[in-house]
Image 1: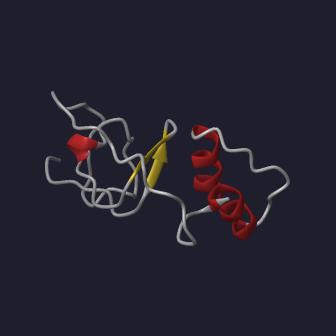
Image 2: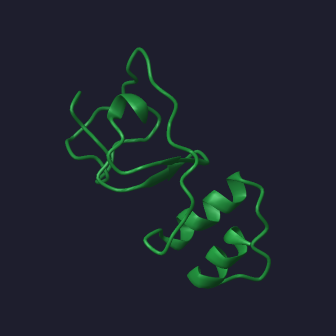
Length: 91
């Protein structure tokens, strides 16, 4: 639906979409519970650039932190915990 917005941050295809991003601005994010309204997988005509400069914090899920690190060329080394991964990213 046209008024759908992300209700949580989503990492898709190596791109980070912030909570509150409109469907038109996150057209590649598939249908799922992260949308405020049911949506179809059809893409709108035009879209703005997604938010990509948000750094991970404690509210992020571990898989999202790993995806962020990979998409930004950050080596997490032996980091396994959220705190260690965040420290590696913020060094």
